Image (cartoon, rainbow, N blue to C red; front, side, top):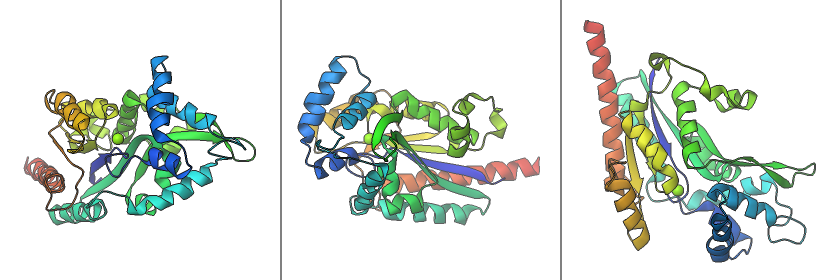
Length: 287
Ligand SMILES: [Mg+2]
């Protein structure tokens, strides 16, 4: 069985600017008001942040509402417009990493995943995402008889993100989970798990990524933080919550090209991981 190295990314503000904000803007919604007043007032009432924004989206759906009769198909069509919004170097990254791993051994594969608190249908609307990623986990809406979004089907909040790391770790597919939502709790012996945590590299920017950073780093994988150097609050949060607390290996602006610091580190991390797997195998053969 080939050993798998998994690169797992948050989506919004990690691979491109916030897609939900872009969706709302495209429909003429005042996003400052949406996030800073409407969502904030639900948070003040004790709502979970993800459930707050999903409820607000549902409240804006209807014949005379800003989002109209929004369907999953509409979300996907909006996602298709995002392909030119990705941060620099994202497109080359996957091919470069696959080539690097191939140089080390044909018996090691590299896979790409997105775990996001954003909208899964929007994310999967992107052709680049569909062609590049092996799995995408995001929030889902259920539809009424005519296809209009009606209910919250799945939310992915911060600790919930780790659930999907465990699904990847245990080799549980999304189709398996659709059949049985509790499958992730199944006991799978450490040595037989499909993707070891030490072979995971996690990249994210937000407070919702902290449980994933910790889980991956504690199990000898690698986590990188993303921040916007131009936004003071982003730098402060990255410093206090990511760097000072040792939750990530390091923190960078979202530039993924081979000659940028994050892009170079990701390539180095994957190359090192692949050589470690190769060496461990050779040593095991000699025993
Ligand atoms: Mg994010």
